[in-house]
Length: 172
Length: 243
Image 1 (cartoon, rainbow over the protein chains, first blue to last red):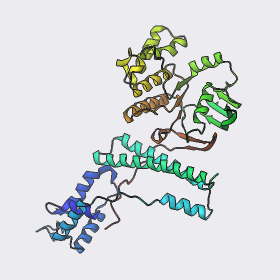
Image 2 (image 1 turned 30 degrees about the vertical axis):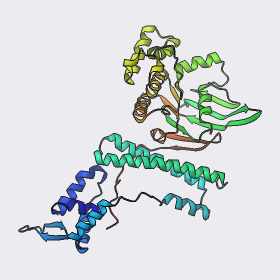
Image 3 (image 1 turned 180 degrees about the horizontal axis):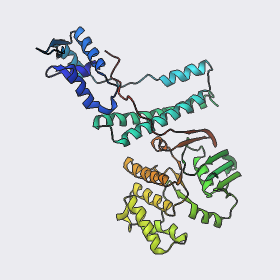
C-alpha cells in the first residue's frame, strides 16, 4: 500500500482525495472496501517517516492539503520499482490447520481435506460468476483470473496432500 | 417425485489377468430431474465405470440402475439401445464420431434412428450446429475438424433427441479454454431447458459450474456436496497491513 501511494504521488503532488480517486478508478469493482480513512492514515504515516511532505492549499477553508514526495520517498520508490516482488509462497493457513488438527486429534484429516476442496470449488464458482458478470474492468479481470489459477493450483495441491496421507496411512 | 436416475448398491468387478479388480464398490446415488452433477475423483476411482453403467453400456456385477422409475440394468441390448436413443445423450471423451459420415450426418443419425423424418432431422441438426457455432463445417468429415470442433459435434449428436439425461465423460478433456467455454455454454442452455446433466471431469472450473459434486475414491462415494449459486466477492484486493 505504502509504495502504491508513493507511486501515485510521483511526477507532481496530489490531494488525498485524488489518490483515492485514482485507486478507485484503477481497481474499481474489486476494491469496494477501500475507504478514505485508509488513504489518509497511509499519507500521515508517509509524512511521519519523511517520505512525503505536505502543505495546506492556500485559501482552502476545508483544510485540503497537497502531498509531495521527498528525496527519501523518491529513493524508496526507485528501490521498490527495481526489486521484483517475492516469488515464494511458503505460507499456508490450511496446512497449518491440517497438521494442528491431526496432531491434536481434533477431527479426521480426510474430512478436513474434503471440506477444503468444497470451499475451493465454491470459490471457483464465485470467481467465475464475477468474471461472467462483466463487472470487473481490465485490471480487476487480471486479478480475478490470477485468483482462479491459484485456486486451481490449491485444488491440485489438496489432491497431492490427500494421496500422500493415504500412502502414509494417516487417513482412511 | 421420481428421481430421473438412481444407482442402488451398484458394484462392478472386472477380471483382469486372472485378478479381480473392483472398479465400483457399492454406490448409492439419486439424481433429481434438472440437476447438474459433476463426478470427480482420481484416475481409476470408478468415474467412467459409473457413467457407463448408468448409460447401460455396461452391466453391473451387483446392484441396480433406475431411469425415470424403470429398472434398466436387466434390459436386453435392443431395449437399452432404444432407451438411450430416446432418453439418454452420451458424450464420449474421444468423441466416437462416425468417420465416413459428414458432421451433419453424424448429428442427424440419432434423429433418424429415433424415427424422425429426414427433413425434420436435417432441421434439428442445423439448429444445433448453428448454436454450437460449427454450422459452416456441416459437410466436412469429422477427421478434418479440430478437437474442440469434434467435441461440439459429439455434443450436438448427444443433444439431438433432447434427452432427459445427458451423460458426458470428460467433455472438455481435450479442449482449449475457448472451446471449453462453448461446451459449457451449451450445457448451461441444456440445463436451462430442464435437462439433467451428469459429467465426469478432472477440470475443477467445469465442476464448479455444477450444482452438486460427487467425489469417488476406490469405487466408493467419499463426498457428495452442493455448491451455492455464485456468492458475491466482496474484497479481492488486500492493499492494507504493511504501512
